[in-house]
Length: 334
Image (cartoon, rainbow, N blue to C red):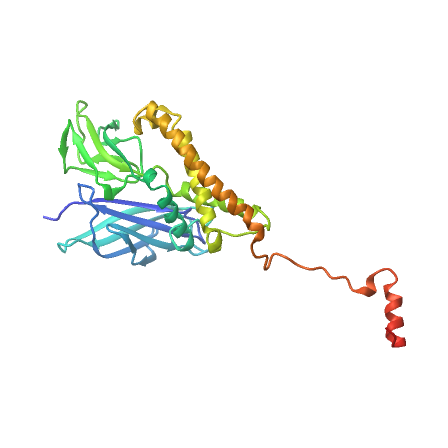
């Protein structure tokens, strides 16, 4: 009998014609451990089953695959179906279906390739602890039909492992974990008396927030003289550290604001510990601010190539210059 896996599909981007968007596939076992599969492919069709795109996704890490869908300018808006096909280590074949809605409005926002991806990953290194927060024995909130059980925080880290408990007993089958949304769907409805708990590890910030922090920092760098128009996709290497320091400052600022609320305080051990953390975060934020400010102040000493220009006025256009020019021309004098 074929082994069952937890499979999650998701996307990043705006899903509009003329843009590049990322489609994701995550595969784990019921312990939350990522599972490598083979011969992974994807096929995208429209409602008439006309093939729009097919290809081979890229493996990002164990059990994690991404496919960059470059949508043509003439792509019709509507509902598309992406079918992921893959084979496990036992030579069993699987398919997972993902529904995608393409609209006519939006901008290109692919953040999983090139320099933007490198900056996002580098920022995660600076705030790693906030991207790996453990939660133990959290009680879930059931849906009306007692099949879907939701938890407080989404963006679960699958590599950290997830444990699901039913009435305080660890269970390993009969459900599917959605790591993106942070919920568990059971194959069959449970009773009103069942209590579902989970141990999980989650990311505080989503990718869109990280990109926003990076963009804010770059906007400040562009504002300081000499004014510039760098984008995240083409920021010069000399400004990368400044972008990361500025983004880390904003991330800490958002985390500090979240600590003012009771639910967040419980994650970090209660109100008293949250108060101590707030003070520590404030010190760390100031350190990042000082380094970032120094780099902003030093920008004016950097190269001005391509940022300066000279306006030269010919002598004969000055008052009295035209007659003097003709005297020089015909007299041969200087």
